[in-house]
Amino acid sequence: MKKILSLVLAAATCAGLLAGCGSGGGSESSAPQSSAAPASEASSEAGGTESGGELNIFTWDGYFPQDVLDGYTEQFGVKINMSNFESNEEMLTKLEAANAGDYDVIVASDYIIDIMRRKGGLLKELDKEKIPNFKNIDPNFQSQFYDPENLYTVPYGPGTPLIVYDPALVNVDIKGYNDLWNPELRDSVVMMDDARNVIGITLKTMGKSFNETDPAVLDEAKAKLMELKPNIRTLAMNNLQDVILSGEASVGYMFTAQVVMALQANPELKVVYPEEGMGFGIDNLIVPLNAPHEDNAFSFINYILEPEVGAKVSSQIMYLCPNKESAPYLPEEYKNNAALYIPSDVLGNTEFIQDVGEATELYDKIWTEFKQQ
Image (cartoon, rainbow, N blue to C red; front, side, top):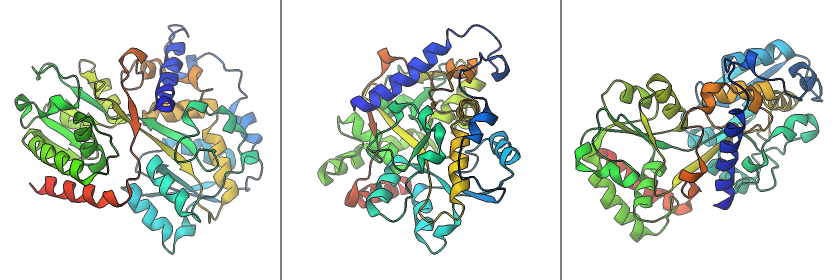
């Protein structure tokens, strides 16, 4: 876990450095100039780019800023076709199907990439000569368990789910996951509809790992999880921040971007860095083995790694910024958000959610029973 701790510390350090950039408007236009090459110059370094053509991207809905996509099309004349999935598992199923050659760039989470890598025959090794901006990646976001040699992945959206609550509606002193079980929070909690995350935080309250595989321990976690049900107001994946902002729920356990949006709309909300230890995840860009427009895929990845483009991406999708050259271009409101700037003195242990093999069936069974309760 030392690797992940240094990763988040690096993000905090990056934000801290931004604090010394002056008190200008914080917009990209007022950001200090970087020593990096201008966008047009940096893009021209990428070799093998097709003249025009198409690029097929497979991702979660709304995960790429439209101005970033438009900028790439304007610069390279490449038509971008977007397809969306709702889960990593759905993505993998479609990739393995007969239409596997339909995609050029895919966004995939850490644990599913590990599965893909171990299966073999799904991932194309990145041609780094065609991605000269690969050098801009913060090394603290690289060499993770799913790609130890950095052969296949480019970090895109790193983040950690967090607890956020409205102090005007909550009298409980919330310090960690265990406080979500407090009876005073009955029918007041909104949570992501995600088995591994929610069962994971239940395990953390028991002093166990997000990746527990012992059936006896998971059975104990199931019993404790069932005790949480009376406090759950809403289980969903999208727009959880709206449930907090409307006052329908007063406490949320949500993904980074959702916490960011909640804080932007209501700065009085409080963020909790759970004392039991935080989960951590990185969504990455990958190129499938049978990508029909391989050169355009590498060109697009190189474009995403340009400093100004990287800042646009991170500040709009609202996740930690994995591009070490983007710091001068990140807006002021980005570095001032408690979900993006995590001080080192409040960090607990952090842990990736990983593939748990055959225990996945136990997690799925627990989750199904919990939702049907």
